[in-house]
Image (cartoon, rainbow, N blue to C red):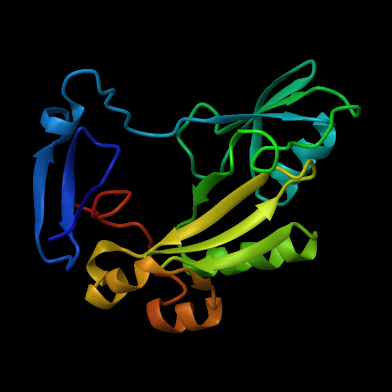
Length: 209
């Protein structure tokens, strides 16, 4: 039976694939976290080198709704809507002469960062906004994850996704994880609903549990 710990709690609910078997475990006592393993509980923030600070700041605030919480010469620190992190994204300007990232083509490097949204309705709204500004690159259905892929003004890729809640992950959904399909947001909204909270029992605890 497949189980997934609902991070980031040190004592977390583990949801079975069927959604019918929820039990509490102490993740700090998990054998995987013994020895030299570091019990990471959350991604706190990402930092990007960008050409033009104002251009990048405007993109992340105007398109994705981030808020600038701190700034200094040549740098800005942004917080995502609803986030409790000190900041979720740092931007450091290195000038217009900087070349494009070659990561994944001729150099190693970061492929993309990913953020999670609460509902498919929000994912659809964001898809429309990203398409409007020419930033949307694609949309994929990973069965348990419905994902948008986009690029910022410097061509740096990011993902925004909605996670199917644990109690809706059945054997059919699990069987589909071996392939990636184009995302049909309209069909997924008809299936799961526009306002169904995502990630419940997967990336976060069941409310009231």
